[in-house]
Image (cartoon, rainbow, N blue to C red):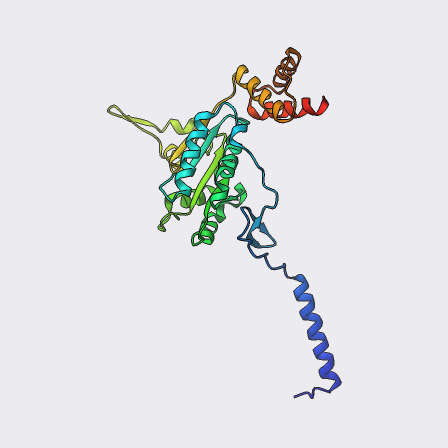
Length: 288
């Protein structure tokens, strides 16, 4: 055995220390610890680590800012109120026209109840396979959590499709009482449907038996207990939204010229929605 003062021993020790330092430098950094005092999180996958990243500056959307969707607001607020009160509530799927308030309504409902201990976790579509792990991570926490999946749609073979089904109610484990999933999508059934699949649908007496492929796709959306549908705005609804946002930006004067500009803005975008009204109001208020 080499003596500690042996120069060969010292050389070997130095080489080992150098090797250890290089290995440590090559290893990915440890994931940050979860800040459980935060009110909102984003699920991150980075350097092989999966963790909840606290969001420092949250998007503060008010329910009063959302125009022409009163029924949808009422239903989602009631469902969320039941949830934070410890009562039974449903997972929610918000579907329909783009820009009409689906995502904003989820954020506004959360903002309405965030002071009661309601927390928000945003999960990207690419990370839906981690949903069971996310639910397991927060299942024993005292707070209530909304898991927010925005703009969902799946292509054939997406693994997130099965993970979402499992997280909703398809596992042998009971759904966690402190977790709800709120998801938005432009597709009602989340997965593309093809005309060829309908060819396998058959009639048995007076009953319609859908093809297995169609049944599988409908099964995912049916796992959401509450469906909320959104539609494009009429011209009057669009103008009301534009008028509201102009007032929010300090522009209270509404003239024929402003209305004309608002209509031209929507015409140029090829649609009328709350998002387009908000964008017009920002442009008009900023330029005037």
